[in-house]
Length: 344
Image (cartoon, rainbow, N blue to C red; front, side, top):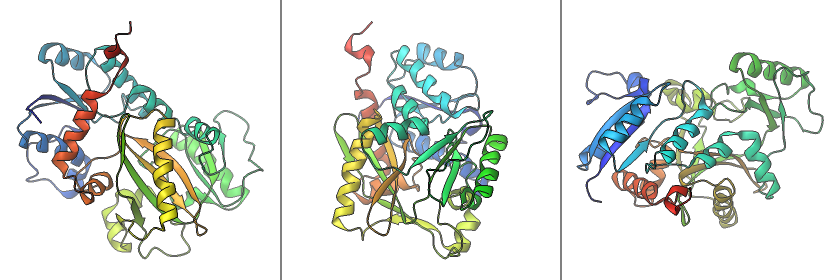
């Protein structure tokens, strides 16, 4: 790839230093992705500037107008503290006719709205757990059609925010308590879905029109007590001590039956196209003991730190980290946004 001018857009609190020296693992974990991307791009010879964004797009507009980057490498996951507002920043980039990496605004909108995405998947007969949405400010009527145990989470938060062992409930009283927790503590509607016991699998996809599925990855819950539901809580995903205590890890899922692997491949592509995704995404699945595959959710613009699942899955297929970033950049520059088609 030729040398490019790249503007890496990150949250204002996640602008990384030039070196890891002197920082603790806990500190580094906060901005690991941003550091990995920026340091790797610079090491590849690109001219890279980093811009922290919080609640204003003035500096972003000025940087694009004055510096004219070849591409904006988008690492934002929220705007002004609101997760679902990152789509508006990407829409702003399209209005500026600025090439960017990652998912388009509509794909972000559909995938970030968990109830809407599940409705779309259900309409297209893509298996997903039965669910209901319990809204804030509305009299709490517990769903009778759903079978216990049930899994309760926010309709809008990501990165497992608010997900704990208590999120899996097996009676109406615990369901009521957990829904009230989501309403009051997270300030969002609650998504209640049937809990699927089984393997948790992650499938990365790269592409716009032509898609490439990366090798399937799996969550290994190690020696967690059998009395606890095997779910990707916030501690399971992000707490290093907790991971080390129970031997929790992620790795290649090399022992999947051919029929399950074929389902995962087919479903991942259908989900990607149904939700209008572009760039790169990760699909989260559960496979029960009978070999039935259920999609839990689709994650546009997943974590691409070099040691995380997406990059490690790519590496296992022969795509090194620098090459992965180059492919993501090429997909962003090649994406056929409406302004490139001459609309307006």
